[in-house]
Length: 368
Ligand code: MRU
View (cartoon, rainbow, N blue to C red):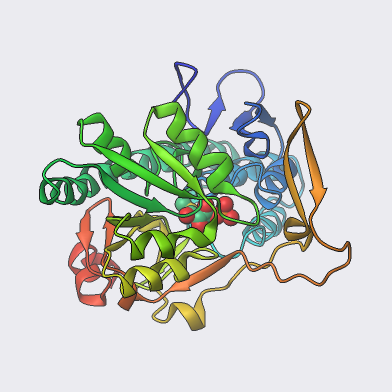
């Protein structure tokens, strides 16, 4: 996607010289556009854990480059295999919910295990990480092409009137290598001249909707309105939402979907108001081994200060302010699970399916 007219991906490897993975440091958006250089494994661990980058797809690509950096570092030690396994385990523990992290680590480790020399392992790790980044961008683009058909149908039913879409958190291009998932059909619709308007949930506590999704949509010229998280139900009751599209951090083989905390409540309100609720997610976000999202998907709990403090621009400086008594006990669950029964459909890179095992199997028979 473009920032100030220049095309960027959210992560890329700088070629030539010593290896350097470049990322857009999302902690500073929308106020500052800062590129961070990641030159060693530990910096990548910190970038994922402390959310310099975030979003399921992007976490997966970053983990792939993380393994590449881990291999470069392990190559300098006497015990390559032991060191690499230790670093892979450390990387796997950075963010528990988004399954793309483990998926990418497992894929890199399996590819690397197929070759013998350290030189070949380095080469294969780099190629596979780059392939994962390209595939991530391609799947997002396909999700856009399949998802836009749904928006087009609603637009036709409304005789060309504006289609109002609600989204939660950021499953935009900032959450992937490029294009995004929940936003990809929206960008495609906008490109095709279909009238769309997006209700953007601010998404407490970290406000990825306010700081990232709103910034993306503004950059792309897509009409949108930022709303406090609790507004969606009211809008739905008054016919102001035609559909909901969110991303997912992990989808089970029967179609339950973990996404940013608060998504479940949107799905409940959507069901009550008979509004279609779609999940947009690539196959790298599916956990084929799970069959019950509520019971089986690990839910990340983050630091209480993310809830106690809020950050924003004040006198041109980004500052954090305390919004509650300093030591108030806090619960900070990062994600919740929307059961399959509340999901109208899942938009994947292979097409749209229902949130049922049979329908998911029809798109991905090789996974069952
Ligand atoms: O904690 P985050 O910001 O990494 O959470 C990820 C998300 O932004 C959402 O859950 C998103 O809607 C799905 S990830 C593509």
